[in-house]
Every structure is written in C-alpha cells, then in structure tokens.
Image (cartoon, rainbow, N blue to C red):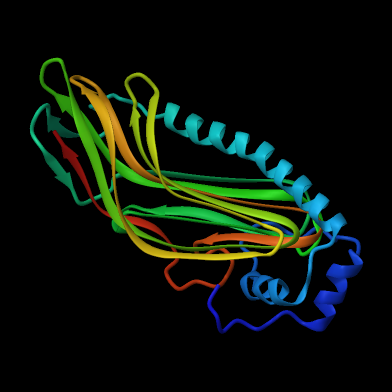
Length: 280
C-alpha cells in the first residue's frame, strides 16, 4: 500500500474496461499490488452510468456479507468459558482503577462469496496487543471477501453490587481502504467490552471508512477512546480492539481494505493498543 508500488499496466486497464472473464484464484495469502493499481485508476478512469449501478450492487453484496461477519465474531465470543480454573482472569476490584498493558485473548476469521480473484487473511498478536486483517478483491468478478480479528484483555470483577466505569483504550491505527470502478471496500475498528457472564456486547466505534467507485483513504493516527459501562461484581469481561475489513466487486473493478500483512506488502499495518484502563 506504499506510494512506491508499481503502477497498473496498460494491459490491465484494457482488461478492466473490456470486463474479461474471471478466472478463480486460490484465496489465501497471495501477493497483490492492489493499492497502487487503484490509485492509478482513480486518476485515469471516469465512472459511467453502468459502473455506478454495478458499484451499488457491489455495496449490496458487501452489506449482506457484513451480516455474516457480525455473527462469526459473536459466535467466537460465545465460546469463551468463564471458568476461572481454566483461564487466568486478572481481577478488577469494584471501585478501584486498574491499568492493563498486555493482551491475553484474541481471535480471527475470514470468508468469501462468489467468483473473483481475492487476497485475504487475518491474525492477532498478543505480545504486541495487535490485530491485523486484509481483504482485497478483483480485478473483475462478482463476489466479496472479509477478514477480521481482535485482541484484548480478560478480567474478573470482584466486590459487591455494580458500579459505572469508563473503559479507556489508547493505541494506533494504520491501514488503507481503496476502490476502483464497480467495487467497494470497508474498514471498521471498535473498542468492545464483552460480558462473558451474560453474552452481552458493549462497544464504541473508533474508525469507519467505506470506499466506492474511485476512492483512496489512508489511516495512520493515534487514538484514545472511552466506553462507559456498568460493571457487575462476579462477572467476567473481555475488553478488546476489534478490526473488520471487507471488499466486494460486481463487474470490472477492484477494491481493498488493507490493515495487515496478507496482501504481501507489509510495513507494520494493523491496529494495536498500548493500554486499557478501567476507570471508576
């Protein structure tokens, strides 16, 4: 996704404009220079009426796939056991502030639909409190891809009753969302608190970006966000940083949501936190 990538060739431009037949490509962890290709097309190619209609269809596909992503993430959390004898849950004493500088829980997932070339993957890294994911699709086809991951901290609340708290997270975001012609890309990053005792999700959005048609947006900034919740004594929680990437195409186009190493072009992209503070 860096600016020194090789630009799209004249042959690829011709292929996109003629909407040639798509040949399926093996999905996992292939190499793509999709970022530069899309930036070049943003400058060189104008959308027509048909491409605008197809881009809307690509966005409709993405919204349908997004429903599956949400279910997959929730299912991954419903599998968390709250048996303190099995998992090492740090304790937060109700009413006493606590700062966490580590991560001890994460998960990841991905999926595809349709027929198109795609590159995708996701992972989490507890040692660096980091989540990565990349979803890239095209050129040309009808289909979509998603990848997600999260990393965070487990804790148990000790005490009596309940008390309101602010779950604060500080960290950094680095990634890129791009699209060209009849394609769309999406990135979403959230601070989430999962109550594992009641299977309840609390969240606040840190960053969201959608690109459709000709678009290119890079994110590279620090964040410091808070989530107000009511913590209940005797409950088990996971506070985590969540990353979702999606990309879809309908016709002649391509798109990418690149927040990780899975497009073969990596210089540290992803999302990570430095600290989580439970502030009463």
